[in-house]
Structures are given as C-alpha cells and as structure tokens.
Image (cartoon, rainbow, N blue to C red; front, side, top):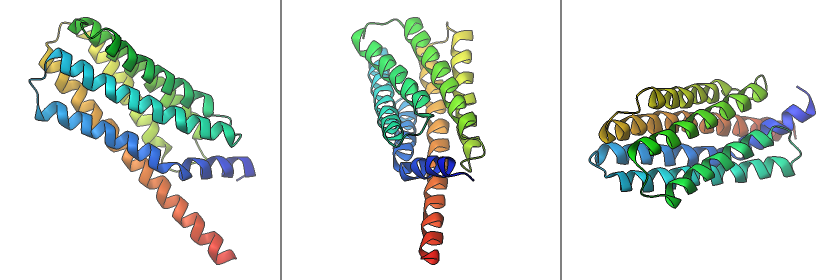
Length: 196
C-alpha cells in the first residue's frame, strides 16, 4: 500500500469517534421517533433539523481535518456536511412547512447525502476495510429518499416511522464502521510498537 493511501486510512481511523458520534446521533433520533410516534409536525421539524445540523457539522469537521492532512477525498465529505446543515437550516427557517414540503426536503437530503456517501466509499475502496458499510448506508439513504418521494401523501405518523427506522439502521451502520476503524487503528499501533 503506498504512503498516501496509508495516511488516508490512518486519518480516517484517527477520526473514528466522529463517525461513531454521527451513528449514535442517528440511533437516538430514530429511537425518539418510535418512543413518541405521535410527534407533531413541529416536533418532527425540530428533531430532523437538529439531527441534520449535527450530522452536517460533524462531516464538515472531518472534511477540514482531512484537508489539513492533505488528503484528496475531503471535498465529498465537506459537500455532504454542507447539504446536511442546509437541510437543517431550511427546516428551522420555515417551521410551518406542510408535511409534503418537509417530506421533499428530507427526501432530497437523503438522496444527496447518500450519493456523497457512495462517492466517498468508492474513493476509499481498497484503502479501508469496511467501506462496504458506507456504500450500504449510502444506498439506504437514497432508497429512503426515493421511497419518500414516491409516496408523498403518506401520513405524518408513517413519515415519522420511516425516518425513524432509517435513522436507526443508518446510525448502526456508522457505529459498526467506526469501531472497525478503531480496531484497525489499534492493530496498526500494536504492529508499530512491536516493530520499535
């Protein structure tokens, strides 16, 4: 493996905690939607807006760290973060959104972030073990977006449950990826210590 690829993998592994935080935020958001399924549209807007902003900020931070390290695939992570923050801001700026408009905002966000996740996974292919989880989460995001756009007349409760299920699965996939990266980092450190 060449030096640049090794640095990329090390940088991603060093930031495993940011990926884990994204996953935990997704799981918490998803669990809340199932625990309180009778959420009003206003509460759904606040929950989604908060989740999208936190997810976006974590992506932006990770992208900036990758850029400082001189790693080329940082831009896809940055764009994904900007899209997530923008989707969160839109939901807060217009809290009176109708269910259908909110549905399209969420669907668009899911499709765009899913595409960026798949692009990042393709870029990481053969560099980081477990990039398949990132591909799967990207496919899941796109599938959610398409499903939401295909059934815009779905009631608010069904919308909440769809989004909740997506957030739990997506969050779990990110947590699995994060701990695989953490394990790789620990193995790499142990190898370096034995060599020294």
